[in-house]
Image 1 (cartoon, rainbow, N blue to C red):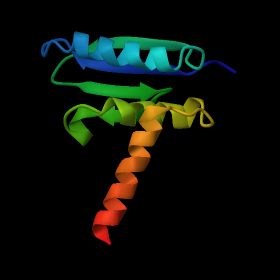
Image 2 (cartoon, rainbow, N blue to C red; image 1 turned 180 degrees about the horizontal axis):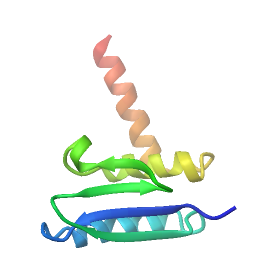
Image 3 (cartoon, helix red, strand yellow; image 1 turned 120 degrees about the vertical axis):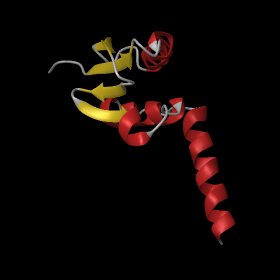
Length: 105
Protein backbone atom coordinates (compact mmCIF):
# COMPACT_ATOMS: atom_id res chain seq x y z
CA UNK A 1 0.00 0.00 0.00
CA UNK A 2 1.39 3.40 -0.97
CA UNK A 3 1.39 6.30 1.45
CA UNK A 4 -1.12 9.08 0.73
CA UNK A 5 -0.24 12.06 -1.46
CA UNK A 6 -1.47 15.52 -0.52
CA UNK A 7 -1.52 18.12 -3.31
CA UNK A 8 -1.86 21.83 -2.77
CA UNK A 9 -2.58 23.60 -6.04
CA UNK A 10 -2.09 27.34 -5.76
CA UNK A 11 -2.37 30.34 -8.08
CA UNK A 12 1.01 31.71 -9.16
CA UNK A 13 -0.63 34.89 -10.50
CA UNK A 14 -2.06 35.55 -7.02
CA UNK A 15 1.32 34.84 -5.39
CA UNK A 16 -0.07 32.20 -3.06
CA UNK A 17 3.09 30.08 -2.98
CA UNK A 18 3.95 31.09 0.59
CA UNK A 19 0.41 30.32 1.79
CA UNK A 20 0.55 26.90 0.10
CA UNK A 21 4.01 26.23 1.58
CA UNK A 22 2.75 27.14 5.06
CA UNK A 23 -0.14 24.66 4.81
CA UNK A 24 2.31 22.02 3.53
CA UNK A 25 4.72 22.63 6.41
CA UNK A 26 1.94 22.44 8.99
CA UNK A 27 0.53 19.20 7.59
CA UNK A 28 4.00 17.62 7.33
CA UNK A 29 4.79 18.63 10.90
CA UNK A 30 1.56 17.07 12.17
CA UNK A 31 1.68 13.90 10.02
CA UNK A 32 5.41 13.23 9.47
CA UNK A 33 5.04 9.46 8.96
CA UNK A 34 1.49 9.24 7.66
CA UNK A 35 1.93 11.03 4.33
CA UNK A 36 4.13 9.80 1.53
CA UNK A 37 4.28 13.13 -0.25
CA UNK A 38 3.07 16.70 -0.05
CA UNK A 39 3.21 18.40 -3.45
CA UNK A 40 2.92 22.07 -4.31
CA UNK A 41 1.29 22.36 -7.73
CA UNK A 42 1.47 25.73 -9.52
CA UNK A 43 -1.76 26.87 -11.17
CA UNK A 44 -3.43 30.02 -12.47
CA UNK A 45 -6.78 31.78 -12.40
CA UNK A 46 -7.25 32.09 -8.63
CA UNK A 47 -7.05 28.37 -7.95
CA UNK A 48 -6.38 27.12 -4.44
CA UNK A 49 -7.25 23.46 -4.00
CA UNK A 50 -6.11 20.82 -1.56
CA UNK A 51 -6.49 17.18 -2.55
CA UNK A 52 -5.61 13.94 -0.81
CA UNK A 53 -5.11 11.07 -3.25
CA UNK A 54 -7.28 12.94 -5.74
CA UNK A 55 -10.13 13.61 -3.29
CA UNK A 56 -10.86 17.29 -2.83
CA UNK A 57 -10.49 18.46 0.77
CA UNK A 58 -10.76 22.17 -0.01
CA UNK A 59 -11.51 24.24 -3.08
CA UNK A 60 -11.42 28.01 -2.96
CA UNK A 61 -13.89 28.07 -5.84
CA UNK A 62 -16.39 25.84 -4.02
CA UNK A 63 -15.74 26.76 -0.37
CA UNK A 64 -14.59 30.35 -0.70
CA UNK A 65 -11.46 31.73 0.93
CA UNK A 66 -8.94 29.42 2.51
CA UNK A 67 -9.37 26.55 4.96
CA UNK A 68 -8.90 26.98 8.68
CA UNK A 69 -5.75 25.03 9.54
CA UNK A 70 -7.47 23.04 12.30
CA UNK A 71 -10.24 21.97 9.91
CA UNK A 72 -7.71 20.90 7.28
CA UNK A 73 -5.73 18.89 9.83
CA UNK A 74 -8.91 17.14 11.00
CA UNK A 75 -9.83 16.23 7.43
CA UNK A 76 -6.37 14.81 6.77
CA UNK A 77 -6.33 12.99 10.11
CA UNK A 78 -9.75 11.43 9.50
CA UNK A 79 -8.40 9.90 6.28
CA UNK A 80 -4.80 8.94 7.11
CA UNK A 81 -4.68 8.43 10.91
CA UNK A 82 -8.24 8.32 12.29
CA UNK A 83 -7.13 7.18 15.76
CA UNK A 84 -4.69 10.08 16.21
CA UNK A 85 -5.50 12.75 18.77
CA UNK A 86 -4.75 16.23 17.45
CA UNK A 87 -4.38 17.63 20.96
CA UNK A 88 -5.49 21.24 21.30
CA UNK A 89 -6.96 21.22 17.79
CA UNK A 90 -9.47 18.53 18.80
CA UNK A 91 -10.16 20.15 22.16
CA UNK A 92 -10.87 23.53 20.53
CA UNK A 93 -13.39 21.88 18.19
CA UNK A 94 -15.09 20.12 21.13
CA UNK A 95 -15.28 23.41 23.03
CA UNK A 96 -16.88 25.16 20.00
CA UNK A 97 -19.40 22.32 19.60
CA UNK A 98 -20.36 22.52 23.27
CA UNK A 99 -20.66 26.30 23.12
CA UNK A 100 -22.89 26.32 20.02
CA UNK A 101 -25.17 23.60 21.44
CA UNK A 102 -25.54 25.49 24.75
CA UNK A 103 -26.33 28.72 22.85
CA UNK A 104 -29.07 27.02 20.85
CA UNK A 105 -30.72 25.61 24.00
